[in-house]
Length: 193
Image (cartoon, rainbow, N blue to C red; front, side, top):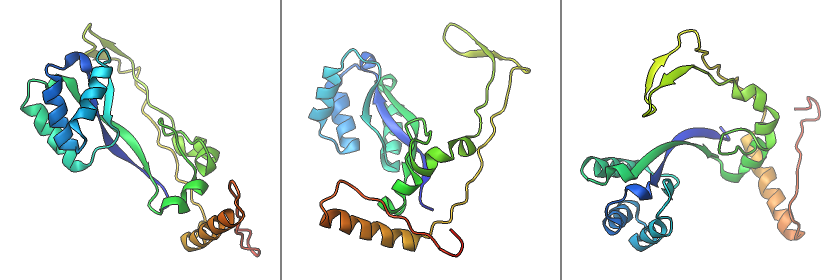
């Protein structure tokens, strides 16, 4: 496995809902191991904003601590947790450039991610609904529902060991030649693989 996506959790604050910025900054700083002064400065600088990202990706301990904090504080309305897709490369830089990158919407931007975007993506679902003034769904049309279709898997013939050797050797040559970058191609002559 050279690349995978998983659900991560982002922490944000709605500055308009903050009751005590010093107290909130201190608590979040303790939970996240971020200096409270940095959090307070950010919150004061963006005091009119409704969405201020405090930390892009929380670990499980931080998520649980934030959930507990939200249960036991009057400031629960100003702190939010948001699910985000996180892209990870278990082998680091070895497979990343070849597999490619995805944007924040997880659409392929480079490499195989971009080449096979139409195969991998599938199609999103759709439904028609009526909402009240508080944006609560009050009715969903049974005929206006189109389920999503999942994308397909793509099987690649990448040997991780060969990929690592090629990657390390290319890095060495880029440094030796003082180049801005480089490319390397490894092919099995008999099969073209």
